[in-house]
Length: 381
Length: 258
View: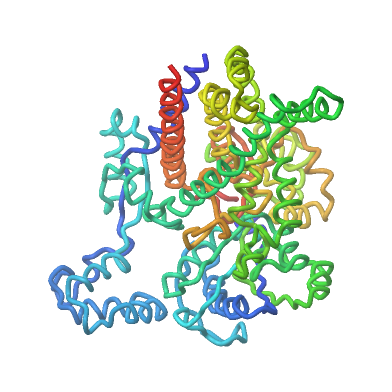
């Protein structure tokens, strides 16, 4: 049943990520012809005149600043005219299934509705999609900033929650006495695993964004950056998600430690090892596969989380790549949500493509964790 | 009833902050504001507007601007702001621009209470209470109208009878009537399905103000009504149900309007 539902979902995502699109030029190149000379054959000066007549003064100034027009060659100016003036735009899109099965009907529709447009097969997931920044023009939009944001956040999350979680599991399992306080702590950890993620978002907002602003904004290092002075940074997000998955990691870690045969520890003690030596050299390596399995599940959950990040103030649009734990950020799930909520079809294709990117990222992370886990298992046997 | 039921003002607020870098950045966004005002519905600004006349601020060369720009607020204005930010960067601005799509009210909260943002997007005018909180932290909001939003009442294409509707009929359509015949005897007795933007949206506020005289009760208690902040839900609902009714913000597609 579950597999059926997942297959349907995957089919939906894939069929939206590829398919035919109708491309139409905003300005017909034929209209730009001067005195009977078609656009392709115009001289550099004529092309430059077209550019000056059609784009804003600010953009001209920027282009001139990048490289003065006198130094640019004809091919370069021609490229600019195509990119800035002719501007191919997507006017209609079709899903993969439709593209394959209803080709004739689509061609008919094209001829009726968009006589000047050209039909093209487009894969919405392509190298440029991963490397381009966010854009309001569907054809140029990409997920680079969101992808980097997701990677940074998940890195902080792992660095924070894995050592702390495993440490807590060892303490609770091996050191803590069975008294009232420890029983309360244990019960609370079990309960925290079931708390809705949005509550963690509020917690993160109160603690990391507001109370610990000096730390999470990086101000304590003396790097006062006005954009991040409010603590809505990758560090806050990573710590919040870390808190969110901490109970999962602790519970899994405890289970894993408990499943190690007690004879192993007793043999260690019998040979005169201290408690820490037994834990570090015997218990932990044996329990590692179990601990890693828990960590994989927890990190996968953190990667798809949107609600707590919205609460602590992830941006929707960000123009510059995040470059450290103190930058502002956006993550893939937020980007996907933003695209799905737009009415234009192209953005739904973009969202589907972004979902595929997120899936690939998730599978890559999981695969590396599984490899790591297998290494541990093999080493012990 | 005309296509245009009324106008919804989309406002962008601009304030000079105390600290150095953002202050320089804020001033620069202003030339874009009237540009967008000239093309209210289009996502990409089209024409260059005179720089100083409307805003009273000098034209700025994005190449010379340093610092970062933080924008937060209305989701209605988000696509517009995104296009503006993109164009500003396109014209040579090298700093970071972030836009948070969190709603008008939340945007003003960050702008006036915590003073985190440089520009606050809103799909309504600023409230007096918000101006006061701004004053409390030493900020004076400056209002820029970047666009005029038309509110369209949209029906399913298969509905061929409702070609003209009065304001009174509109009030009935969105409250007590259960079939179209209840509103106008000349119309068939088809059930009405209503799709309206959520209560947080400026579109909803404006509709209630104009049609129901600021009383939310009738429209909220109407049967067979779906409220959503997600324009997609509304548009799709409209496509599926015959005789559906919907008021949409500016990002809707080309559906027939009354």
